Length: 362
Image 1 (cartoon, rainbow, N blue to C red):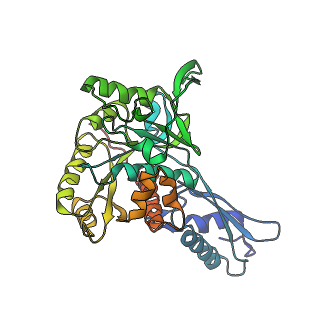
Image 2 (image 1 turned 90 degrees about the horizontal axis):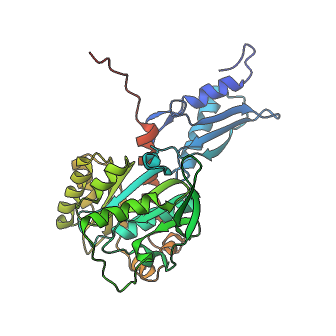
Image 3 (image 1 turned 180 degrees about the vertical axis):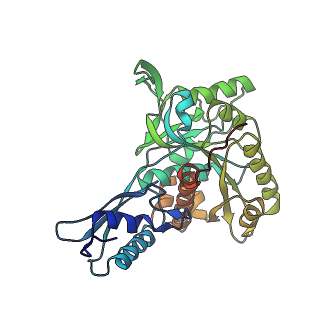
């Protein structure tokens, strides 16, 4: 850890910090590539910078404390370590197959309607954006688009000049933006009172256009609000790109859980990793804990419960979904927790799995 004279060295610091176990991943910080720098300042203070896999990383204070304790144990005479953070979202580059510069594409689905799926999709997108990530939100619920209303958006997308993967000029639809969150929905293109009556092939072409012909730019996360049920939009998406994962939203009562199980089975069938289950509207009316128990039974992560709360409904009706992330909102902490768990599960899909030894093919 120290040199022959017992002095602290940069190499010794990096070794001590790298050996800290990250409890979120169950692996050492050096194995996860999270030690950005470890050195002594001119004044002799250990300075550590950790590179987080997402800006929505939970419990930074706990990680800071663990690192400081490791440095203190290795170098008892050294001053308290100064620990700082940077972040860099790593991903599966799910959009690369179709020319998108998107690190992670996340589908948010449900087995049935009426469980608050669109509210959760919009909330996850907004929460990740608020944390500092570059985020897009695509409304794939073609027959019942509600994302524009939840965000209070009624603009028409404009045609913009964009660039293809080889630098060629391409005309695309510009995403509608809300404080940096990029949004696309068929709700921007039709009158709110007009029914959307299209056949399957047109439905799939619309999804493809929204993905490939929207000027998304470079994104850390693209959240896709799926239609309810177990239709074939998931199949379309899985064929177009390798999604980073899917989040399933349900309410606690048994009738909703029955359909959530089908949604999980659907995503698994089309080889989309299931990031976890969210229990929405948890409380006296629908009960509590059903989704957590079902997640444990199915072997999928439980991403948290969001209480049934009139404030969420009021803010959604008013097109003020962002207000749910203010300190005064009773569901603020629950929503932030869900966003953090989604971000961590994505990071686990990318960097958290131990690398398996390659197999010799006989």
